Amino acid sequence: MFHLVQRCCSHIPLKLQKLTLRRLLQYGRNKTTCPSPLSLPLQRVLSHPSRPQLLSQASACVTKAQGFHCSLRCLKKRKPKDPEPQLGLLRHDMRSLKDSPKPAFYLGLAGLIPFVSVPLIMAVQQTYYPELAFAQMTYGATIVSFLGGVRWGFALPESSPATPDWMNLGNSIVPPLLAWFAILFKEDLTQAAIMVIIGFGVALHYDLALLPTYPSWFKALRVLLTVVAVFSLVATLGLMDVYPEKQLSNSASKSK
Image 1 (tube, one colour):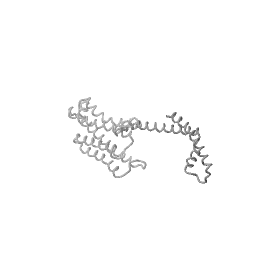
Image 2 (spheres, rainbow, N blue to C red; image 1 turned 180 degrees about the vertical axis):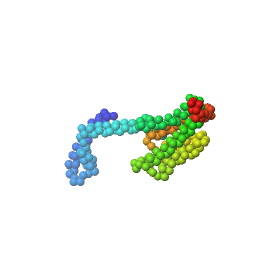
Image 3 (cartoon, rainbow, N blue to C red; image 1 turned 90 degrees about the vertical axis):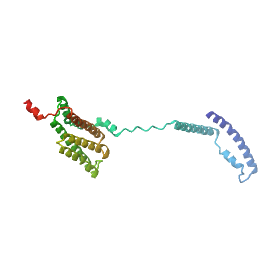
Image 4 (spheres, helix red, strand yellow; image 1 turned 120 degrees about the vertical axis):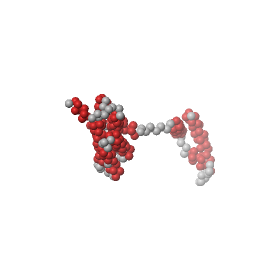
């Protein structure tokens, strides 16, 4: 295509020059002050660029046309980008567990010892101890109250995303109230453990979905600790019907 344009441009200026000379001779013979309608094309021809200029302009036009054509072709072939898959809230936060500070991570794991040790002791000795179950339930109620206090403290600083309004401060009182109800059912450890489990679920729901949330690593740590604590309470409730009940005071007196 470029070579064809060059050939055409090489012939056109010669013809235009001949026409220009003829029109000039006619214009000199007439000696008219006003240019005739035929003289207007002559002025345009006289202002016409020379042959090298025409070649350079033609090559520039061809280059622009080729670039424009290629860009259109690229736009036609370009496929729309697929939207990136959005990970779920829980899955995204669990990836941030590795970013948690070491003191918070190890202290959180150490806080699971009272939960996990109770069903392990019962399973090893194949005996259900109600005192250990009550101690586990009481410790769980304490942790539920602690989670409500964490929400209160998180909303108080001025730079916190959680403002100290009725929603944040009011909902932070709900877990301690559930813990208090759990201790009231100390005579029925099954109902007490269920109340503690409900308290864990409510506190986790507040921290993950309802209220302005904590950092991602803390939410991941909260999920891990809550799941282990709840399964430990459920395991203790399950062992109540599996193994025979025995008081720790009786076993201690027999050992003496």
